[in-house]
Image (spheres, rainbow, N blue to C red):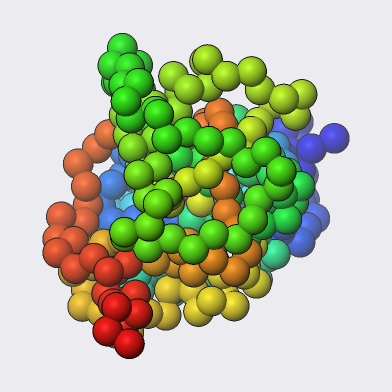
Length: 290
């Protein structure tokens, strides 16, 4: 028995279940990609999740996009609570994430980008991982499958599994460990998974520099470090907001990537072209001066 209702029950009244995960999905003008992401969510069985989409498109195109609306109806018929919010004006991606986090009440929050398709079963894997590891954040790094024939051993070299439990770790731009960012380039994790003997659980935690695209937080841990409220001190042209938030969580509660990664990057052009301000640098700059 799973929390996802199948077609035999779609026309029957659905009883509301308390969500274990709030899936938080910021979007802006990416209708075909959004439909693909929603189809991925519709293929998830457990745990119970609620979906909140925050739309910053300049028009109301989502309401007129048949594929998006069809997937929203499927999710609702499956018994998922779905909320679609309009959030304007734009104040940058850090503020957008802060807004979404403020809507959440579930024990866990999954920040899922609008160009990342989750493999069936991915939400269950991430939830199991964060519970078993007892850490503050886990994630499935997005993979670009157009790079399946482009193996990069030199970029895979920093891979290191967590073998004795996940521990808090302090990372900054010049810290040992930040070289792990190359693990998430191209399809590196896909190649690493193919050559790694995975445990019986089917997944392996590994050390990360940071994660992007599909990141599950223990909500209380994220809120304990201030979430994304640092947006108030930054201009809208910001990037790296996920790095800043994760480094704060990892320093107090620990964090890990999950191998294999079932998160597929759709490889669309970015919808945030101006990221001239590095949030991680700005947020931690006071440490260098103070």
